[in-house]
Image (cartoon, rainbow over all chains, first blue to last red; front, top):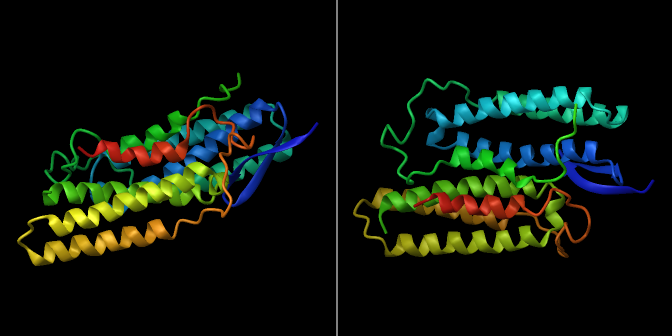
Length: 140
Length: 114
C-alpha cells in the first residue's frame, strides 16, 4: 500500500499507509500537542506563570497525554510506528511536566494583573486541540 | 490606546508567535496558511508599534519597555521560517486533520484580547 506523509513531529517526517486511520488519529493529536505545548511554554514566560489557569491547563494536557499514551499502547497500530509515537508522547510529557502545575495560586485576573478581558490565553491554547476533527478516535 | 490594551496585545502576540514557531517545525512550514499568518502577525506587530507611538504614556520607562517588547515580537515574526514555495498542505494531501487549521486558530488567539 502507498505511504503518505501526514505530519512532522519533533523534526521527523511521519508517514502512514493510506487508509490507516488509527495511526493517523494519534499523529494528528501529537501534531496539535506540539503547537499547544509551544503556546503554553510562551505563557510560562508571561504573568500566567504565577496564576492558576496555566497550571490547570498543564494538568489537563498531562492527563490527556497519559490517556493518549495508554490508548496508543492498546491500539492495533503497527509495532514500529507505535514505538516511535510513544517516544514522542514521552517527550511531550517531559515538556509538560516542566511547566507549572500548582493550581493553588491566584488567577491573575483576580489579582488585577491580567486585564485582557474575559478570555484566557491558557484556555485558548488548549482549545487548539479542537481544530482536529478527523479522524475519529479509534475504538480501543 | 491605553497601556493595558497594548500590554495585553503584546502578551497575546507573544503566545501566537510561540505557537507559530512550533508550526514552522511541522508540515505547516510549507503551508500557505503559515505564510499568510506570518504576514498577518507582522502587520499586527507593526500596528502595535504605531499605536504605542500614538499613545499618551507619561512614564518614559513604561514606553521604552513596551517598545523593547514590540521590537522583540517584530524580530520573532520576521524569523519565522516559511518555505519559499508554499501551498495549502490539505490541498497537497499531507494535512489530514479535518477542515480546520492550527495556524489560523493560533492567530485567532488574538481575538481573546478585548
